[in-house]
Length: 76
Image 1 (cartoon, rainbow, N blue to C red):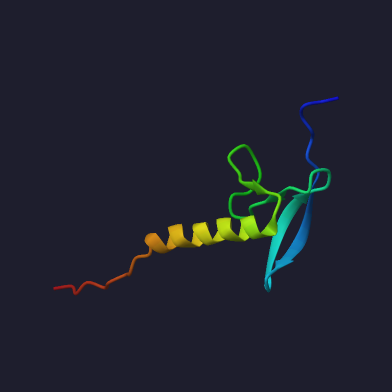
Image 2 (cartoon, helix red, strand yellow; image 1 turned 45 degrees about the vertical axis):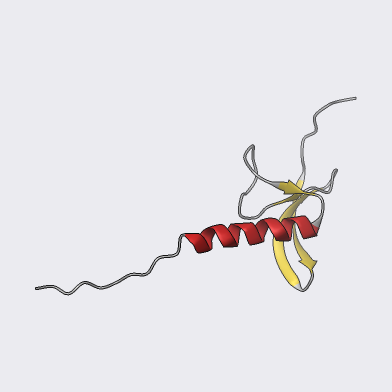
């Protein structure tokens, strides 16, 4: 028995609460990878689609905090 596994990611479209998201899901464990974070050591993984949706909303709130407007300056 091994304490690690080699994930086998399969791309699929996840539909939950009327939202369709293209994600990677591990065949063996069913883990869902966040499409914004990607795959790797610093990525976020979820078992439940609801948790992924909440995580994606957190990405949106974080991005909303950094919105800025471009103001054209008048040249003299």
